[in-house]
Amino acid sequence: MPQIPSSACELPQDGQPKALKQVSVLRHRQNSHQRCLDEVAEEYPVALVFNGISHAVMMATPSDLEEFAIGFSLSEGIVASRRDIHDLEVLFHAGGAEIQLTIAQSAFVGLKEHRRTLTGRTGCGVCGTESLQLLDLVPEKVDAVQSVEPDYRLVQRILAELPQHQPLMTATGCAHAAAWCTAEGEIVRVFEDVGRHNAMDKLLGWMAQQEINPGQGLIFLTSRASYELVRKAARLNIAVIATISAPTSLAIRIAQEAGIRLLSFCRPNGFVEYPD
Image (cartoon, rainbow, N blue to C red; front, side, top):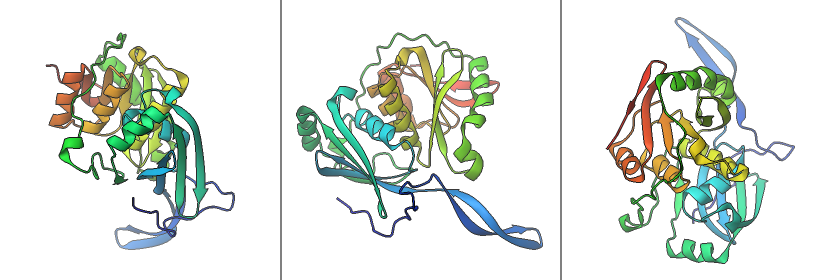
């Protein structure tokens, strides 16, 4: 398993890494330039360790890491439920963060049998999978009783309210968001991260902690709809996903097989849906 380099990031004096970092920039405007300070999103190595064995190192924004670890464990199929995670501790050090999880022995045996070793890039879905045979392209069927009937007014409301829930994006222009919204389009909770998969995992982890009914709302993502995002949603019984950008062909196929309503190219006046 790749190790986190000791010089990968700086640890503040209070021991807690920040989502933002100030850097010196030279700002060019036509024929002039000015040196000033700007804020960038922190990209932090986060190691996930299950029962003492390192499984993955993901590059993530160092916030909401408990939710991230829970969501990752569930959405990757490492554990079947929140109850399979017996203990969780987040440790910060100069080289990055380490999340130590103690999971049920039955889940740990399954993890070892289907081991997936990866150094996760922020935009990466299946990078590091040891063989094509380990790719799980057959999603669970979503059986949540759906209360959402998407229309342009629902999408319009979410798009109008979302910017005020994106402080990291506002400050840096460099973060994805994953939002849980009610059937009426009210935004309940938003998580941000430099990686779209990480933002989704943080949201899914929070939903598991709060025991949210997945049929009572939808997930809205400020990204494209990739295969793995839809696959993660299927594992957590999410019935509706909406994205700002385009889907991939595999994302469409997985959504159709799982029975997920996929809405993409979401704009204030409409969206595109992909029925069977």
